[in-house]
Length: 181
Image (tube, rainbow, N blue to C red; front, side, top):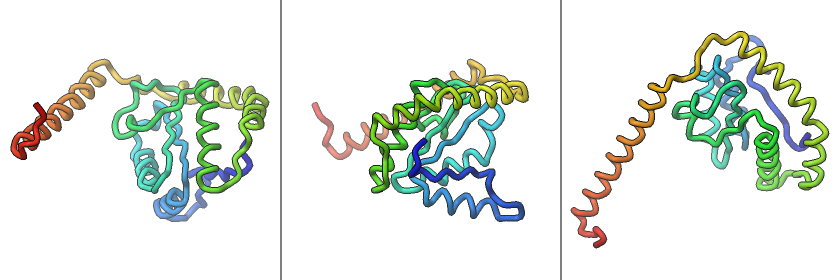
């Protein structure tokens, strides 16, 4: 859809290649990465490796695409990224983000009208392919979504960390005498 984008997929690595260094090299040069998250791969170490390598790259965007899962299924550190759901409106926003990033790196972004027309033209085909992938993923996956307990434990962990940071910040301000009235 956007001709200036040169996609690379980690499954394109040649047999026998050292995948870690090849992925690291490609991701260091990337300004945007779409990491497709499914029930099957959500907790896989290689997903975290790829997201981490990309997020360390200056000005890079890590775009997580949720295929057969919901926001609440994603744990930290992947939860910190702005997710894209399998919805036309959200995927359009992702495409527009990628197009805007091209402008930042002095590439050739599409005019907004051209991009919208291309998106509308290719959407039915993309939607069909994504539905087939999602169907295959859900048939293969026996992994359940996160339990309510897991979500509550994560919320508790986040709140405790915030409280701890707040306590430390207040203690430092009191010691330094810069506590506002």
